[in-house]
Length: 242
Length: 137
Image (cartoon, rainbow over all chains, first blue to last red):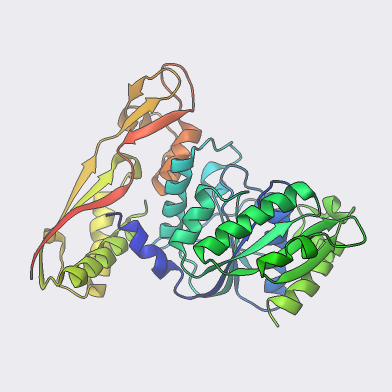
């Protein structure tokens, strides 16, 4: 028996809500949503953690402009607080190097990270998931019993097709879905709301494509001023912290 | 793996298994630790002494036997086999420490000594597991 599995529950016992920000496709804004969501929750006074679980393509540190910080070692690993957010990422251990891991190794690395990280008391832990419903998603569902998913999609029929598959998997596994967020909307009408209406999950809202967002990347304060963040904040207030 | 996390996880697991199997006394807990975890036994013993008061069943260091499982790494490209110990001595301290916390990052810092590929498999010597628990009902 693997003793690490028994400590994972303890690591989350003082975390009130755990939200995995996921989505079937890459490039639809999962990491931006997860990072900005963590900043918004912190701004509203919630004790928030952010865990970048995209081991092969970690990017939250790039989005938030985090560098030169490291976890504290105290009976495990305590993630450093950056912009008020407790932030954990494989980049502390991998630096700027690529991380060439196969599926089983990703699972082992996830177990290890969950077992050693001490989050202490949090109102929200936001997990930035890699794309898809492969090993990382199944591991998080298996290992973190109270996790709920926030599914990000775009209007693209490609993203929607994969979002449907993810919602099917979550429904089959009985995993709660906090809601679906439509990102990068360019058409007047929302496509996701209607397309995903049959899945009986809350539609949180849609965010218009923000042409100026790229310029704010790497600066958490500027990021919070973007149209993207302002729209996301309204959605968060209406749906997650009301 | 971090020694404190390992110590805590062993105590919680033994407690859970003891409750499940209705054990009143623990005689021996056999723990196997992969070489890649790079556990420092002195730190582990210190951590264990500190977390043992959390145990719901009497447990002490004398009843915990730790065995280090030697590693075998196998290159998926040229099929060469080697072990972590041989290669670890050449790693800078910060890279070795990173592997201690998350052993999979070995794929970042190590290469097959024969062909230089990072695409290798850790076939042995990774992970932590409780092999068996001996006790009385």
